[in-house]
Amino acid sequence: MGTSLKSKFVFVLVGCTLFGLLPGSTVRGVAQADLNDTGPKTGVRQLIPETPQYGGKARVELDPRRTSSLRFAVIGDYGDNSQEESDVADLVKSWVPDLVLTTGDNNYNEGSAETIDENIGRYYSDFIFPYTGIYGDGAQVNRFFPSLGNHDWRTLDVNNLPYPYLEYFELPGNERYYDFTWGTVHFFILDSDTNEPDGHKDDSVQAGWLQTQLANSIYPWKIVVMHHAPYSSGNHGNTAWMQWPFAAWGADFVLAGHDHTHERISPEGDIPYFVNGLGGRSIYDFQEQPVSGSQIRYNGDYGAMRVDVFSRKIRFQFINRQGEVIDDFSLVKQFEIEYLPLVRKTSP
Ligand SMILES: [Zn+2]
Image (cartoon, rainbow, N blue to C red; front, side, top):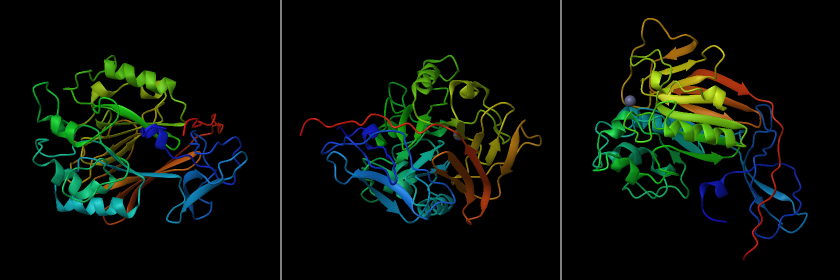
C-alpha cells in the first residue's frame, strides 16, 4: 500500500472476526462499529489485524477519552496570532480530535509567507504533516485540512495563486479544493473565493468536480467545507454565488465561515448549513433580520465546533472558550453497513 490518505483512513470494527486476511493485509472499507452515546465509555480508534492469517481476529485500539469513532474540530477565521486564537486552540486540543478542519482565513491579514507559521503552526502544528515550521515536530500524518479564505488569497505569485498557503500545506489534489476520506466520512473542501481559477459558481469546473465526486462517493457521510457562507445572518450575509445545490448532489451538511459568528441554518427542504468564524480574529454582529431557516445565532465569545461521528449519527457542538456548549445538534441517518472487499497486499 502507498502512503496516500485513502490507505490510512480509519476502519472500525468491534467484536468481528475477519476472514480472508492475508499477512500484512490492510483493511479498507466504510463499515463502522455500532457505537453511540449510550455505548461503552471507550472509543474505537483503529483496526489492526492481530493475527492476519485466515480467520484471524481484529484487534482494535481503544481510546478511553471518548465514545465516538471519529472526532474532528472545526475552526474558522482564526489565523491572527492572538490571545483569542490561543484560547480556542487550547480548547480544540483538549478534545483530542483526530482532525482539524478550517473554514478559512487561516493567515491574517495578507496571507503572507512571513506570518503564516506564527498564525497557524504556532497553535496547530501538532496536526500538520509535513510540518516545516519552527513550532515543534508536527504530526505523523496530516490531520489538518484547511480551506482557502479571502485573506489567504491576498498574496499571489506570478500565476495568481496564493503561494504561501500552497507551499505551507501539503494537501490532496490541487490543494485549493480537494477531497479526502476518514472513517465513514467523505470530506469535500471547496475554494469559495472569486479568485479560484476553476471558478466559484455552480456551473464551474470546480462545481462539476464536486458534483461528480459526491455522486461517486460510497461513504455514508458527505461533508462540504468552504469559507464564504452560502447562508448567513452575519455582517457579510449570504454568499449567493456559493448557493450550489449541495443537497441534490448528495451532501449531508455544509460548514462555512467568513462571518465571525456561530450560526446554524436549515433552509426549508435543505440540509443544515453552519457558519463558524469565531476562531480568534474578531467577532461580528448579526443583521437585524435573520435569514430564513436560521435556528441558532451566537456571537458572545470565541470558540470552535466539536463534531463526533458515531455509526449512524453525527453530533455537532459549538463550544465557546469558556467551555460552554452553545449549540448541540445531531443528524441521524439509517444506512446499511457495507463490508467492502478486503484489499490484499500481494507483494512483500
Ligand atoms: Zn473571510
